[in-house]
Amino acid sequence: MSWTTPFVLSMLIGGVILLAAFIIIEQRVKAPMFRLDLFRIRAFAAGNIATLMSSLGARRIYVDADHLAAGYLAAAAWL
Image (cartoon, rainbow, N blue to C red):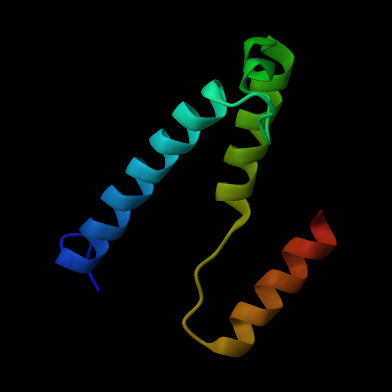
């Protein structure tokens, strides 16, 4: 499946819309599930960005199911 197929594009656009809706709702409710103002703390934001980049760099996409399971096991052990 390529990045330009209608299914992939609709899933990406839908994900962005849901993320935006989550942020808007979390800012307006009395008791949010996650305090978004934590991202104003530079160390918190930088730590989350560093963790995201590390996770993206450490992941590999495998076609074989056995390798996929081994990849998840290695990621769990690494964490």
